[in-house]
Image (cartoon, rainbow, N blue to C red):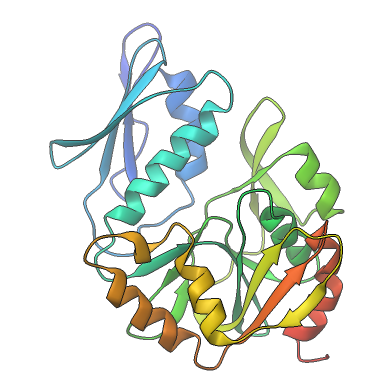
Amino acid sequence: MGMTAAGSETAAAPAARIASLYGPRWITDPVDAVLASVVPAESMPQVEVNVAGDGRHASGQVNGSELWSITIPRRRWLEALTGQIVATNTVLLRRLVFVHAGVIELAGRACVLVGDSGAGKTSTVAALLARGATYLSDEVALLDPATSDVLPFHLPMAIKPWTARAAGPLPASTDVAGQGSVVFRLPAALGRGCPIGTVVLLRRAGRGGMTAISRAEALLRLARQPSSFRYPGRTEEAFRAWARGLRNADCLELAADQPAALAPALVRRLRGWA
């Protein structure tokens, strides 16, 4: 539920969503809109988020226990708060494992794109979608250890002006929320779970292009990202699950100043044309 500026309460998130929100609607409504397309990937308790009336602070609780309390930044607060909620959701995973990554599906296989902040992940995902891929996620690659399938986490993409410039023509999508120059867009073509076909490691570099790397190197690079690898008690499980998932995967490094510019070559490879 969310509280309006006048103090009355209104429902902000049904129980099927990953979080319920309480607070001023100028904050809870945009956050709820961004999270609305994310379906819980496994049975887990819902995160209850309480936002202060002035919009300056928020806390997250699960089953009555507070897990975090943050000061909401004045700039890019929508990204900050939705990011905190998504991070909490990954902490609550018990069966599935995850890596912070973008994921698309093409030719019945998942392509997992991994890169540090600023590496061009979102623009590359957008460029692949514009060339016929379907969308699984731009934030979380969820892996089912039992099947080695990557499952959807349909969080809308946070499109910044420089992301749009790097991606080129954007895929068909719906604008669900925005703050300042950042627009959250949910792609029209949403993918389902599928096995891993390719892992692409993005690196900002003047030259380099697309090169093959070993599965062992790809696994180690995955482990450096925010992921289940870093959670106490889940490291070994994450290594086993992702090692199985990578057994038949094509592992690549994409090095360029604008990795999205290499999307046509990557699509050819994903379709088996290269």
